[in-house]
Image 1: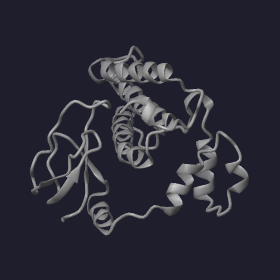
Image 2 (image 1 turned 180 degrees about the vertical axis):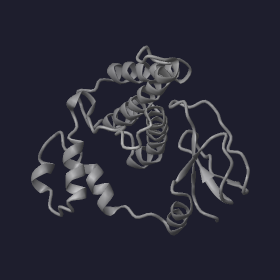
Image 3 (image 1 turned 120 degrees about the horizontal axis):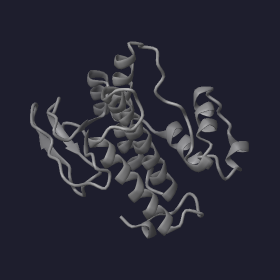
Image 4 (image 1 turned 120 degrees about the vertical axis):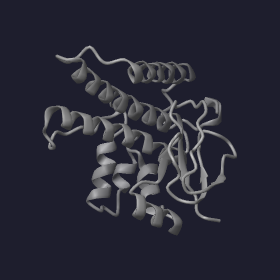
Length: 216
């Protein structure tokens, strides 16, 4: 999908800037999937911090797609990739340092633009009237509105309860029989039996995740 098909949430993000930032971010991701960082006293420690770079850049990519105007359902579907890489980084970091309390995530914004912290505060503090905040250009009001009005389907709730996640990475086995789809490919919805392996293919994001969509 081209930039012209989006209604940009930040008008200062030009088409050229978007394409450049996306290409640079994806290049960084591909580099550190196979190469360790230069930080660390051992190759093991350097590989640990390569996962930090991967997680951070997948988050940057998600924020970039939000900024350029991609749909919130798409953003929601891709956040599993960000969570997955932060979980991998956290597991490797805590295992390496033998400290289960080490933090792995700090909330930040891309180029300091979006006030995601304000949106989180509104949600966590259950503030019902955020009208004053909505006047500010940097407040991601559509994310808060989406959170307050969105409800999971019963099939999604049951799947989340049983598996503690909503999507599965390509190459892994289906944990439940039913229909699955991926936003990485148009008209991808299809039926998988328990144990079927989810197919992989080229995607703008590199990693492909399949999302459960019910049994019918």
